[in-house]
Each structure stands twice: as C-alpha cells, then as structure tokens.
Length: 454
Ligand SMILES: [Zn+2]
Image (tube, rainbow, N blue to C red; front, side, top):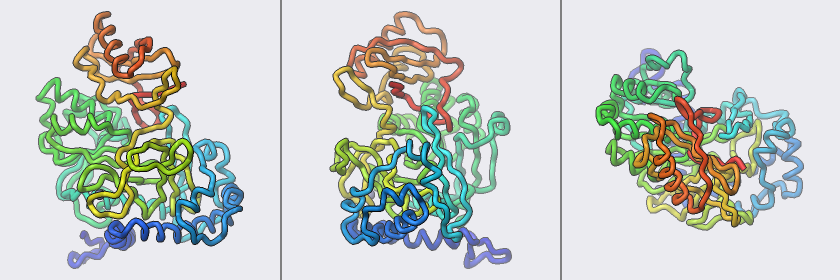
C-alpha cells in the first residue's frame, strides 16, 4: 500500500479516496466467497433502500413500483419479475421523469455519463461520486484478481486521449493513475489514442516495451494482423505479460490468436458507461463473474424468464447505488450466455460469454436470428484485407465493408464473397464497400465487426 500522507512512509496512510476504497475492498474480498443465497439477501436489503428512494423522488419509478409492497421479503427473482423492464428508449425519451429531484448529498457530486451505441443512439445517465467509487473498487478488484504486478509498465490505447496530443508521441504518466494510485505504488503508464495509425502504434509500443496492454479487441486484432504479416512489428509486444480488453465484444478466436502470436492471455472486462463494471473474468479462468455488490444482474429469455446455464438472453441490470438516475431492471441491449456455479467457489454469479449487442444478430429470411461468428472469418487467407465489417441491411443482401492494402481482383472478391456466404450459412448477395484509409469507428471509438441495420 502507498502512503499519501506527507512525511509518512510506513505504515502507509492512504488519502480520502484510498481509505474509502480500502474499506470497500476489504468487504469485497469477503463477499465474493459468500454463498449465492447470502449475496442475494444482501442485495435485497440494498434494493429496498434503492426502491424506497426511487419511489419518493423519481416520478417514472413511482409509477412502476406502485404495486409493490414497500418492504420486500420474498425472493429476489420473484420481486424483480413484478417490475417492468426499462429500455434505452426510456432513458432517451423520459429521462426528466426518471431522474431523482433529490438524493443524499453524501453520495457526492453528480456528473453525466454518456453512452454511445454503435449506431449512434446516445443515452445519458446521471452518476454520483458514489458510483465512481464503486467503479474504482471493482476496477481494483479486477487488478487484484488478475494479480497484476503494479511495479511494471502499462500501455493504454483507447479513445480517451486527445488526438492532437497523442498522434505523434502519446502521453506518459509516473504511475498507473486512479484507481491504482489511490492505494498502491505503481510503475509508469503510457497512453495513446485509439485512432492512431496501427504502424505508429507498433512503433510506440517498441519505445515503451510494456508489461501490460489495455485496448479494444478490434485494435488488438489489428496489432496481431500486423505482427503476423511482419514479425519485426512484434518487438514492442515481446515483454507483455497480459492484454486487458474493454469496450467491444471479445471473440474466443481473438483469445486464441493472442495466445498463439504473443504467447499471452487476455483478461476481458465487461463494463458500460451507464452502470460501470458489470463482470470481470474469473482468475481461475473460463467465464466472467458478475459484480453483485454493485448491481443485480439478470439474463432473460425471449419469454422474460431467467436463462438456465448455457442459454443466451438479454442483459438486464439494476444499479444498486445510482440514486441520481435510478436504473432498475434496465435492459442494456446486450446478450450474454448464462453459466452455472463456478468451480473457483465464489458465490458471485457467472456468465459464460458476452455475445454483444442484441440488435447485431444476423437475420435470415426464415426468421432465424443468430450471431455470425465473424471473428473467425479467415479473410486474410484470401486477400490483403486490413479490416472488415459486415453490414446487413436486408434479408437478401450483405455488405462487406473493407479496408485493403491494394485494390482487390474480381477473383479475390468472389472468393471473399463465397467464404462469407459459407460462414453465414445463407446465400446472401454480397456487395462490396471500400473504405480508405480505415473503416470508421462508431461513436465513442467502438468498432463492431458485424452490424445489423435492418
Ligand atoms: Zn470463478
């Protein structure tokens, strides 16, 4: 632990944020091992406090919660199933009604968190200092679960860094920044904007030689493409111990490729701007644990019943600590696959994998909808494609959007179309759309390799 008090080195005395985080982490260390039923009991107590507040101060929730008994004693699932699900659309159209007119001032300053959907339907949620604190605690928990060596260097390639500043050289910092520096001494960290050309990214990594890399899955994929084409470009990633991914759906194929090309694993974090950290990977491997101390997580089937292990459903969350814009049974628009109890012994529920945006399901004329596993589409074996994106706009046609190293021949286009059709399992007519230099990212810097725009 790192001391924040001038003149004190040992024993460490953290600052205000550090003290709060230490108090939370100590509890999280214990609560993760509680039996699932005890975790649910604790969630019910917090839900009672949240719904009581929402009933009084949010007109939207007052209506939705009107029929519920004020103090809840029945099981968590039964109780929740009596509350209608909130949607993104509610936040877009009725936020003035959802926001609470009052909240405990002790929850801290309120700021607006903007979430940008890939097709540009932004939603805004008010979040308090308390929400920020919980977010930081879960982020620290993730570092601790993954047993990262804070004394090592960290490279971050993400959307937050200003382009002008980082286009040439990136930014650097004496430590890993918050939340790590609230409690721990750490090595240097470096930041580069996600929009930076991939060759420049590789060069920047060679200058830093980081132990850890934090970036988006599609950016990692582009770095791996580069390393596979030109092994010299691997140099900057030679000392990596682990890659941490955020922001986009991570396909299993990328995990395998990262392991094969770089010899290291990926630790993925599932989070959104609206609710913070939702789930992190089990340190024993094979799936994600839900952050139940911060939110109630439900996976619902099409008939609104909870998913059994192995089933895929809609992610519906209740943020237990947002008293500014209460999100009670909020449908995030994501899909995930349920899992049973984890072999590691933690009582926190488990998700097998996160599937991504619900709207990005492939639709077939016979009514079937599914995820095209486009992450494994072997386009580079066919043509010098740097980047691809598959867009569905009708039941008959698919657009293959490409950024290429040189113009493709008709034979190459045909081979790509053939492979894609085989991959999708339906004879779509394939249209080509070329982008230079790159395929534009969605708002917020997110990139999705399959988009359904129907
Ligand atoms: Zn586990």
